[in-house]
Structures are given as C-alpha cells and as structure tokens.
Length: 235
Length: 299
Image (cartoon, rainbow over all chains, first blue to last red; front, side, top):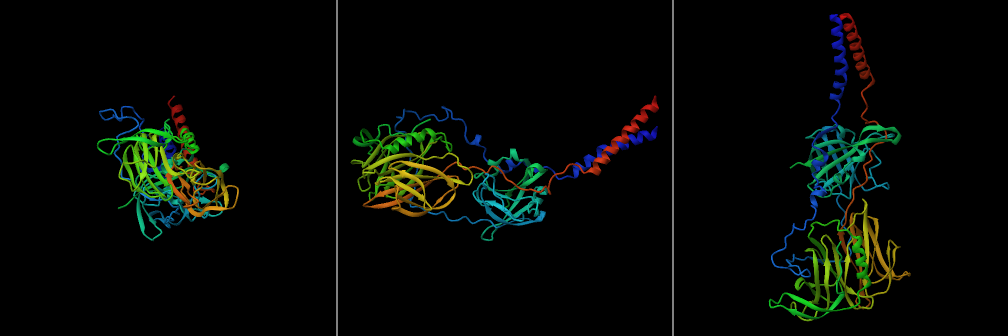
C-alpha cells in the first residue's frame, strides 16, 4: 500500500515536472518592456486631443474673424529651384557580440507586396532606408530572414535569444560605431504587429531589429510571428 | 470642414484705411478680378483634403511662393508685414498661423512699408485649422499677375512612395509634364494642378508644350521624397524665361504592411519534444495506476 502511494507521488511529479521543466528551459517569449513601450512612440490619440470649443479661450475683446491678432513668426525664405536630395549615408554593419551576430547591412525599401524588402542573402540584414538612420530621431528598422530553405539559418536567427542589456553595435557609413542596449524583446503575431510604432519616424532614437519567429506554418511557408528587439542608445 | 476661399474673389484693392499706428492696413473695398479656375480647383480639393497632419487644432500651415518674374515684393497679411523683399523664384514658409481668414496683399518691395497701392491682394483667404496651403503669386496664361491659393494634399501615401504635384502658374498655354521622357501629366493649364503617386526617388522632369516634344522648361533633376508631397511649379513668362520651382510638404508616411522573414522553419518554436511527452504520459499512467491500486486496497 505504501509502495502505491510512492508510485502515485512519483508519477504525478513526473507528469507535472517534465512539462514545467521543459517550459522553464525554453527561451522566454518576451523580455524587458513591451516593444510599444520601448519605442515610446507618441500615440496618435495623445497627439490629437479632441478639439474642444473651450480649449482656446479667445482673448478679451472681440477679434474680427477676418483679422485674427497676428503674432507673426519669423519667416524663412529659400530659393525654390529644383534640387536633388543628398543621398543619406547608410549604415553598413550590425553586430550583437553576445549572440554572435555580425552581419553587413543593405539599404532596402518596400517590395511589390507592400512588405518591407529584405536582402535575398540570409547572411545580410536590411536597413529600412525610408526610415531614419540609426541614431536619428525615430526608429531605425533592421530586419533579416531568420532562415531560408536553401541557405539555412539567417544572420538574425539568434535574435530570439537576446536578453535585456545585450549590447548592439551599428557601424555607420563613415565607420563610426553607435552602441545600443537591448531594452525589449517580444514575439508578436504578424497580424497584430504594431507596424506604425515599429516604423515610427518621430520620438527618441531607437534601434528596432525584426526577424521571424514562433511556430512555422508549412502551408504558408512562413512563421506565425515576428521577433522584435528594441534597443536604446548607450551614452 | 473649412474651406480656403478668397471670399471676395482674388481681388485688386481699390481703397484702404491706414490706422493711426501705421501698421494695420484694412482693405475695405475690393474689385474682384475673375476668379481663376485654379482657385476653383483648390476649393474642390479642400473638400477632399482632410487636415490629417494638423500639428495643432488651432493652427494652419501657410507657404507663399513668389512666381511673378522680375518683381520683388513685400507681403502683408492682415496689414502686418509677413515677408520683406520677397524675390521671384523663392518660397517662404512654412508658417504656422492661427486658423482664420487672412487678407493678403503684395506691395512693390521698394515702396514705403504698408503704403500705396498693392500690386496684388486677396481678401479673406480662409485657413481652416489643420489646413496646409500655399499661396502662389504668379502670372496668368495672359500674363496678368494673380494670387492663387492651393491646398497641399497631406494625405497618407503608401510606404516607399511619394506624391508628385505639378502646378501650372506660368504665362503659357497648356503643357505636358514628363518624367524620364515619359508624359505623366498632359494638358495642364494655368492655374491648375495635377497630382500623382510615384515610387520615391530622383526623377528627371521637363515641361513641354502640350502634345509636342518642344521642351519649354528643363529637364531638371528633382527628388520625390518618400511620404511627402513634392510640389513642382512651372512659372515664368516668355520674356523672362520659364523655370521650375519646388516645394516639399510632409504627407502622411506609411509603414510597410509587414516584415517577412523566413521560409524553412529551422528556427521554429516546436512543441514539447516527443520523448518528454512520453515521459509525462508515463508519469500520468503510473500515478493513475498507483492511485487506483491504493483506492482498491483501502476498500
């Protein structure tokens, strides 16, 4: 009788302990703050409070509608002749020493289907050239394939195991390195990826690295999720 | 929503009162000259253009383009000098102004400030909150000076694209606009505008007499900025020569629709490996067996 109690306890321990131990040894789905918080993009609702008629009390004394009191700002004038914008100096290299990532960067745009374009070569990482360069205001997006059926694992495959505090180094076109620190990693289902936040062009400088993750859906030849890592500039 | 309209038409001032401080010029009488088709076009656009990019709910954004050849001017708004010694071919602004109606007047740059007859004026140009407009001082097709308000389309464009707007404000008949040798806008007449969305990047643009290959202006290289409205003005006259002027207005930039990222499943999060599933099942079975045995042994 005592032996059956022992077996009962051991069996339950095994049944509960095995999945729990497995789950605990898996990399976390997310670490640090959420991506949206880390990017700290001003939300549109905060930017645009609903107009209220009482919000702007008019100064005492009726101002004729056709002639509001002018406090004219200084006016700048410029030659309006057509110009070609100077090409932006694209960043050239991304590395996360702690995760063994060291990949060249290619400037990329938008592919025909409207998604961000990525370098064909999975050993290279794309920098979204319509967004800011790393270090400028807004979020600079670097993304790459996590893998490819012919080429194997991609340069950004280790992104899913990054931890808060990992140092990221981006080399600019002029060879100057900028250093960043990971503040957030999140695995987000592609359908609910906060694209406007991730590709935000305002707010403090952020480095946002994106690749694929989560379960693989063979029918779609695609992953279900995106792994998004946000880093802040290191002084 | 509001509308941008010279309520009494684009007018020439007949009389005005200068108040004692010598700054507040109130134009009290206007003789409207024919409201140009361009201004009418601008009204139509106003209804379509939502002030999506309003940085404030009480301000409007105004730019002023000087496209009357060989005539430096001073620009006054509601009697206050807005721009001093404004040269042809230059753009002033963008200015953030309180929304409302503005009386605009252009005086010869060498005249004493705020006195004399304005060369051009437009009364009650209404700038609704959040609106983004450019007022162009230019020549009509017949070579008469005119003020035309244009509404700048700041609505969102798809990621990777830019809006290209061409405005015909030159003393010239209908023109075609070509980019890289290909006609992108045809039969544009003064003071109309036409807009299209193109992949962002550099283009070589020229303006030809409508339906011909006779180049009137250009070619000139210009950048169509991503997420912006690049506005090109064809201006000038046969005597003074024709030129292009450009203005870039931030439009709503869009994010790409997603980030692809893998096709092999090598980095996929798998479920629990089979041996571990087996171990769990074995544990459950053992517990169930022992539990049953324990229960029966108690009976």
